[in-house]
Amino acid sequence: MPSKTNILLFGASGYIGGTLLDRLLKHSKTSTFEIVTPVRSAEKAEVLRKLGAKPEIAALSEYDKIEELASHADVIFNLANADNVPQMNAILKGIRKAHAATGKPPVLIHTTGLGEVIEFAQGKYAAKTVYSDVDIEQIKSIPAAALHRNVDLVVIGADEEGYARSYLISPGIVYGLATAPVHEAGIAKKFSIQIPGLAKAALARKRAGIVGPGKAVWPHAHVDDVADIYVNLFDAIAKDPQSVGHGWEGYYFVENGEVAWYDVGKAIGQALVDLGITKDAEPTPFANEELENYWGSLAVGSFGGTTCRAKAERARTIGWKPKHADILGTIKDEVELQWAVAQKNGGEVDFTFERGLAKLFGFA
Image (cartoon, rainbow, N blue to C red):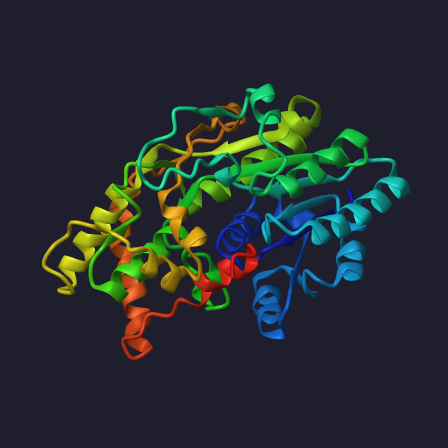
């Protein structure tokens, strides 16, 4: 009997990570997997155990534990934090140990994001530069100070040194309500960041809002399609690792079209009209004071006015076929969910998460 593939999945109780876990547990070869899922609480661990994973209680800041878990893994999926250098260093220490023990470089599939190529447009224009994940020189030209780039360079460095096979998944706006068992069990958020944040702000001000005129655009992909690309990549590597690019040739952008922030705001506005909260679906520009109040800082609040453009060309070469393209058609469900959450909170909209982003990125 062949030994099992030891999979270490960070973020299994998260929005995208929980969706990916469901895919792995339903995989045709799942009987050959041992899926280890670090989580911070016994409650989450019990849910994951019942689903068929092997949970370990470990915070991302417990670097010795992270290193030890990584030292036993054949494949590591990191969907927990795109900007945590100490966590990644701990993972790589474990990977280095695994490589020294077996002579084989473990697979590291890290989640980054297209935020590393944004332009701070204040909603005034759409970026002219379109990035491609098959244009290596263009990817190498991204400044080291760009968002997420600090971890990306560490991940690629491990590949260049030869003790890891590194791959980077880079989505734009991820949208849609997640419906995997971890989400239905209530231990993981069902929604993403950008659109829910705008929906919450609209509910608080009782009018949809945009940054500037809303002309800035972003690539987007549904959470189910995003989860699929991890599986497509995992399967391609398992089938023929030599045929799949890694390191600098291992970037996989994730997009199935692009959307303007104005159109997102208008769709949120229509959802507010349908809920009877306002009579006008037209979004209006946020005042700086509103951005600071809802998101904890002007810089984070202005993210809805940034722009970037990218094409997921490499992803499609490994069989990725996204099924969802109607981002605007999903927004009503997103708004209704945030409205329902607010009703349970006595009508108050909770911006704890959004303001936490300002602290995370050092703006608060």
